[in-house]
Each structure stands twice: as structure tokens, then as C-alpha cells.
Image (tube, rainbow, N blue to C red):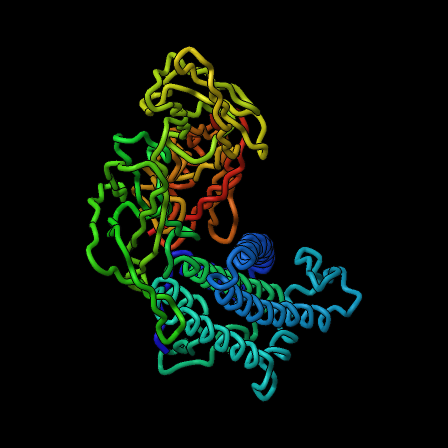
Length: 546
């Protein structure tokens, strides 16, 4: 069976077993035994960390499936099939470890802990080399190592089938990690059965350690496939969960003779691709799948779209009354072009008030929100503006358009902007304009501009800080990282270093400098403070070293 390239970590672990086994053969039993105990203890800790980190990923699958069952449901099911397979192989190996110790020392052995766990340091018959071979190899070579190999092979093949050739790096890692090919015999004249080469005549402590190493390999392969499956939730869809055709007029009420102007765009659009926007009449029909198909008819207008994906529709207001206009927006989607209908109305009549947010459709607590308040035909010096659930004052916010700045107070309670105007010496009040009030969204933690994926070691080693970026938000706000931890796995042991600000400590830089290709870099427990003064706990950054 072809298999992937062996990683440096796997080579080191394999060499370590060879050295320790050679020490045993030379009767340096005490030193070898203690070394095996330390290795097994480290592997047990690594297993626990894999379980915790994989459980975080499974929780993410659950949340994604609850929010969008259609998009995430099938990937969640595949993930939990992977979990079931990993648990079955892992528990089978754990049962073998318990069986070996029980047969060697009895069911009352101090090494046997509750919940099928083992304390390697409490094992007394550490150099027993008959019982492990009896159980795993057997006098007729029909021992349980055969079933173990079959279980590993079946799980490995299942994982490769699940990847479906879509993640070559993960596939090669799994083929190497879970490789059970028969190795060459010591004489170099042929091959030796994997079962015999792995377990035969080895002392109990060595066999237990090797079984622990196989458990680590199973959890590592599980992690590789989980990362691939989670990445597929959004792989064939838009990077947002809702597409809303949007029309934002500069005013919905204009005076006769003035110009009506509106922005037409997809609210969740990808700015790297311009939509096509048509204004006019259209027809609707259903295809064989019952999906609506829209097509423009008659004379229609094609709007010019700028680099931000916004089209401007302008028309001179004529007679007084309500006017309706409509059209289609066509955008490129992963599965092909998608067309969305839109429609909007405006009124032509006497002057009225216009209150519009200049950078968003909600107000955010903790920052200045620019607001444009105007009454056609009335100067701004003749306006009186007040606001519920907050304060509003005249002023500018950075380079945003708008002569007013709103500061809402309570999240979840709408704010009303109430305008009065001095028209011909008489104060005239207008209906209040209501806005939703929300919290500033959490930023995304980034390391070398990445929040996940692969990274060159040289790039990782050159970094000095962890940053927080507020993506796809209307305002240019700054978040300051206030702390994070860096975790790596070295030779089966997890090592963690802490920073209490946004900068990498010398110890953290040393950990990164010692990473090898194929290892993972975990940046966790990331905290940041934004302009509202609130501390945010950010999701971890998980990177794989190339």
C-alpha cells in the first residue's frame, strides 16, 4: 500500500523506540524502563489534549448545524462518523492495555484506575515479556494484534475515503501515521509481519507505550480529517449566510423638480466581483426544480457599478405622488450566476425630513456614529435634533459624511432620532426615525495575517505580535490584544508559553523557531480590548507549519 511521507516527529518517535528497545536488549533495564514510563506519560497527556481540542471542533460543528442545518448538517454527520471510528479504535487499544496489565498483575493491580485508565508508574511487572506476546501475538500467531491491525487499516481507509482526494497533505499524513505495512526483517532478506515486528518479545512497559503511541496517531488522524470537514462547510457557498438586495435612497421624499438618487447593491456582496444591476420590468418563471428564474424584458437600464459593488440609480422627480421602480441584480456564485429581484418606492411631494446613517443601518454602543440629518430646502442651522436612548450632537467623525454624531447607551433598545425644523419662522416636527442599537462585533485574531491554515516557518518566526482585525465593518476601529498563549507539541509533549500583551515573548519565539514541518502552532486564550472598553475572548488561531 502506498503511503505518505513520514514526518520528522514520527521519525523521531520511531528512532526513540528503537533506541529504548536496544537498551532493553543490552539489559540496561532500569534506564530503559524509566525512559519508557516518561514517554508513555507524555503520550497520555498528548492524547488528553487532542481529545479536548477535537471536542472544541465537534462543538463548532454542532453550532454550525444548528444555525444552518442545510449547509452544515451533512458535514457534521461526517465529522461524528469520524469521531465514532476514532473512539472505537482508541477504546479497543485501551482495552488491550488494561487486559495486558490485568493478566500480568491481576485485577487488583494498583496501575488500574477507574474509567479504564492506567497509571504507568504503578505497574510492577514492567519487564514481563511473555504475557504481552501471548495476548497480542499468540502461540499460533492468531493474537489480538491481528484484530488491532485490521481496525487501524479499516479506520485509515475510511478516513482516506472521507477526504475523497480533496486534501492531499492530510491524506499523506494519515497514510504515514497509520501505516501498518509489513517492514523488512532484520536480516534484510524479506519482510516481517507488522504484528511481530511491533510487539513480539517486548517487555510490558514497552508494549504499553507503543499502544499509547498508536492512540496518539489515531487522534492525530482524526484531527486532520476534522479540520478538512470543517473547512468544507463554507467551501462551496458564499462567505456570508444571507444575501439581501438593498436599495438605499439619499431621500425617500423629494420636492418636485429635485433629483431622486439611490444606491442599489447586494448588502453581503463580495467586493472582488462586481454585480450586474438592471432597472426595468422583468419576468419570472419556474424551472424543473421549482426554482424561480428571472429575466429582464422590454427596455431596461443597466447601472454603472463602482469598485465597491454599488450601482447608482438617478432620475429626475416629476409630478407629485408615489413612484415605484424595480429590477434585477445578478451576481456570480460558486455554483453559477444567481439573480435577485428588487423593488423600491419613493414619494415626490412637499419637503420632509431625511435622517440616514452615513456608514451603517444600525448604531453601535461605545463609539461615535456619524448621522446625516437634513430637511430639503431647510438649512442645517435651523434644525433641532434630539435622540432617545443616547445623545446626539453636532460634529464630525473622522472622514465620514454627516454633520451629527450619535452615541447610543443601551444595547437591544432601539434609539429614535427626533427632528424639528424652523420653516418660515414656525417649528415643525417630523416623525421620529428609529435605529437598532448593537454591540461592536468581535474582531478576528490574526498571526501573520492568518487566522487558520498553513504557514511557512520562516514567516511564522519573523512575527513579533498577534493582532486583532475587525473585518467587514463599517468603521475603522482598533482592537488591542491584551494577552494570549502559544502551544506546540514537541516529541509528544505539549509546551505552552504566555504573553500578557500583543507581543511574542522570547520563550514564545523560541518555541516557534523550534517547530518543524507538519507541526501545529496553537495560539489560544486570546483577549482583546476595543474602543468600547470591553474585553473580548477571541477564537484560537491554529496553523500548520509547512
